Length: 337
View 1 (tube, helix red, strand yellow):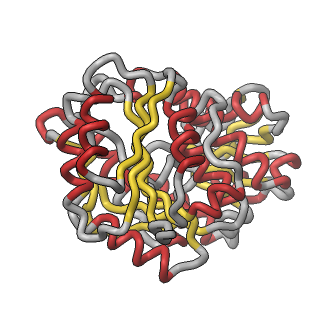
View 2: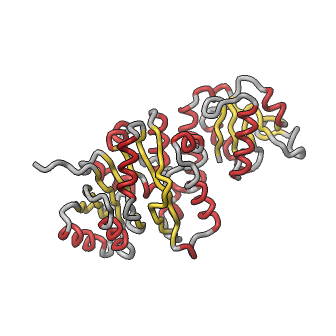
View 3: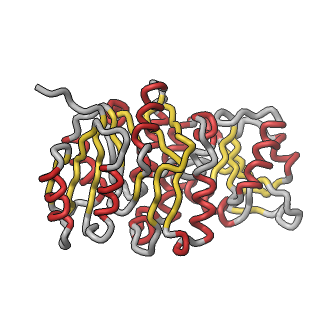
């Protein structure tokens, strides 16, 4: 009996016939060839199934599963249940992987047994369709490379692009795979793996071209709205740091900080104060919590500090302030968005 391939490519598709041939071609052109593809047609009404079936007929590595529409989580879990590889490579039907993507990610997971997922550098395309917000997100996502830098950013946003995930199958099984809880399934999986003690890594080279467009699931599905990300983030934050129950200081009294305070209240976490540098806000109250200056905030005892600011430069300044005061990141403080 032939040995199972080390890599299983998970390819969920619904109505993807427009760009699917490009994605298939990029998989076929991988320099690492010892893989299987588990493609799940999630209730397509276009020519997706016919394209996948034709691919499977000419390439014995490809297995096609046809399913009633269940959504991306159901399709991914169906693919994962069928997968035989010790590594799971994600791929979407409208993206393009560079030829050395699988090899580079395979090598990193082989070398680092402490990592559950490795990503890679990503680039949105076509470039004339990419808006400023997406460009800022792309630049932010491509910045943290080492496991240390990635985990420092883990409560800002999902620091790895989902279509670029290359996962250790045993680690994913350990946390029971993907879940549909009304928030981003990829971010939820990353946070659960991190909480379970697994590291996250990244190949710095740009190895995935990530298609941008108005119909992307992350643009039209409420599970990927800012409030859903916030609920996911706070859910895992509270369960990662039990000391939050003693109260928190939120650094930033703007809209982002106020939204965070409401999400924390839903989890039963008391906000003891807001920290601000704007003199017009200092001395006010927000949700019955005082707005303090930097010195007053740092003088508070028995509290956990949460940096809730949107701009990267400001986050770095805040990291310096809190670290300079003797606080330890991911122990006494966390930076968020």
